[in-house]
Image (cartoon, rainbow, N blue to C red; front, top):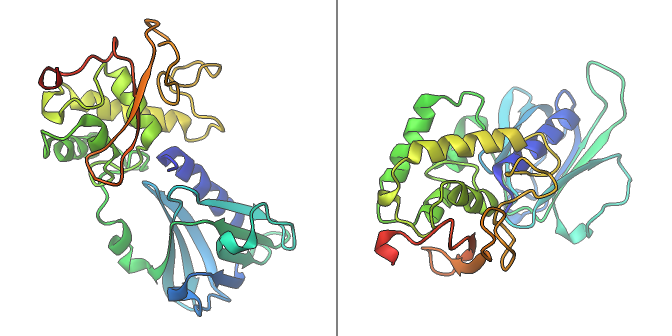
Length: 278
């Protein structure tokens, strides 16, 4: 599933391409909204919210939001109308055709959302219905020490939960995916299954998460090591030597929700099991 930095870049792509234009056609290829007519809607903005995308419109004074989520396979692409799509047409879930910019010259553009995990059209005033459950957004423009403290409080609410699972839970803090969860546990020197209650400094982990996502939000390639030639410490490196100690990285599927296990990576030397797991 895309991380928060990927969603941030996707929102920026859609915002640059669509904002300030008027939709000539909108095709929402999900049963619930198949008949929705957004023709004539002015595109106001696209903003990220954790791993969610919110594209806002003004349709004759009615403020509407198209909520989309990439889930595992989703992606948005922007191109000129009539260009060949890079994915099969049957995977398109949303097609937005927008005319030239209202305040400058330019050609129409087409934005296509492929394999989207969620497509919802709702009143902008009701956005909380789809994102209100999220914890503090690590890439929110208003991020500050108060939001950081709220994220720590949410993590601490389940002291027996494994750290990695708690970090992946978007209701605790929004934006962390499997890559960052693995890397943050490594950087903290903690085994991924360490109970949250045994973590001495959650605030530092939250701060590290926010700084890493911020550093990567405008990069085409995610780097957590400060060396683009070796972009991750443990993620996707099962069986390879640890970059610090040389011990072979281990991997296994884990998770505290049955049926939703995901692969985990750790160095058994740099991240020994916690006392309760020995």
